[in-house]
Length: 374
Image (cartoon, rainbow, N blue to C red; front, side, top):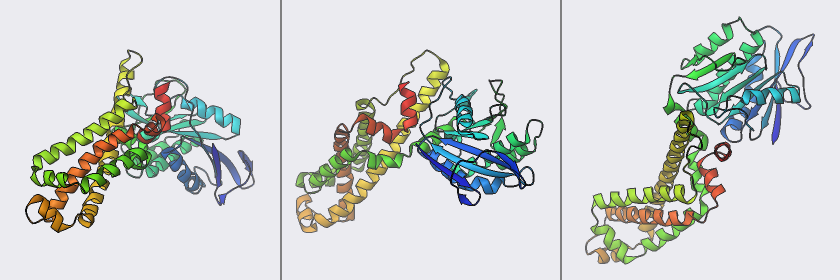
């Protein structure tokens, strides 16, 4: 766990508490964030919020922001909305005036993604990072958190801050909270696709290339053998484009299926509850999309590398003699295409040497992993 304390003038030393002085009221806001993308967003918010909130909603209001990054221990039901309780507890322990939890666990309300919740009594709020827009989510998070803080400061009966939030983020609307202590619940009109895309964004599938080092090593070794193999040259020259596409698709499906089966990534509902089944389907879809994007990126990198390696290593005269005709760039491309498909299957076997924790860390965040094990 690590903590950053930010003030209006930059980094401050020591812990501040809410106080009233000659210059006006000072409010301490605590940001409690899951590791990964929520922490990155919280770090940015810690630097921007004091300036954005200064003198709002009254002249002389000053804000200090404390950021804490740790794996949030959720209580309550499977929706994860009781992170409000955790935020309120930490607020009391740390002496903050207001607390916001930034979580990477999805929350739903009647099939719609919940983006944020506010409890005035608990002086706490929750921001669901996967429900934010996929492109530049920190910008939307800033608008939402500013609106929630101003809504809490202004108190019940003042609709101005929330109206300003809805104008900034028109895709959000107020939902009817299920719990009496939740005063504001914002949901997204984008639906399940936005949540699914947000979950994949939180997973950061491009990290899969670096997370599966053994699989990458096995793929490179297989590719090196194929590029200098005369029979592979001949096969690539004679194979039709349809067969090359089939080999491509089969190799991608093979490595994704092997990762899912070997490391037990596919989840099943533990209780016969429709909400639980929908939640697990969403997690499984996010896992498959994360794997697909990560594997496609790996395949693309491997293909480009094989094209340049083949062009440099395979002498045109030798290649031409093996296939019985003059060679062109298309022949090198087809060779690299076939070798990449074979190497991807070899990479699937190499991924079996990875630890399950490594693979799970590369395909979903630590937060998802912990939630699925509960």
